[in-house]
Image (tube, rainbow, N blue to C red):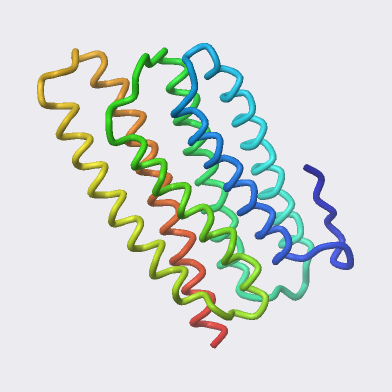
Length: 206
């Protein structure tokens, strides 16, 4: 994905929207991973890696424009925090897919699909919210719902940990699976960080 950096051709709003759309792509690849045969996972991981690289490009474009812009639509620190948190989401999702492939996980524990469903919903909400930064309209429901989803993700994560430590799994398998569910939880946390940053921006601009 190519990002034009001159102010006449794009804007921070456009680039934030592109970053969020790319996160939706990543969440769909996570969903695809759930139903894929183990033989198909490496190819999904390659596509996720490409999406993560596109996310990096988007983040670097935002930082470049931030460093070269005399006037910004809102505080520079908030622009930096928002771009960084969006980038974190893609990093965590890509890491989760990569770990599934590297660890050659035969079957993900019951409950991981709920984690991924929460991430997919948060991704959709985030993509819908980013264009609204231009007007600051209809954002309150967004950050309230993402915070609710993050609380739901916390509950799912705790139940998964309890299941992993119930004695059913071999110790080495526990280590592998715990790292995967922990990274998915970090992705949920990163969505909350994005929502909290959006709330901060909206309060400052009100």
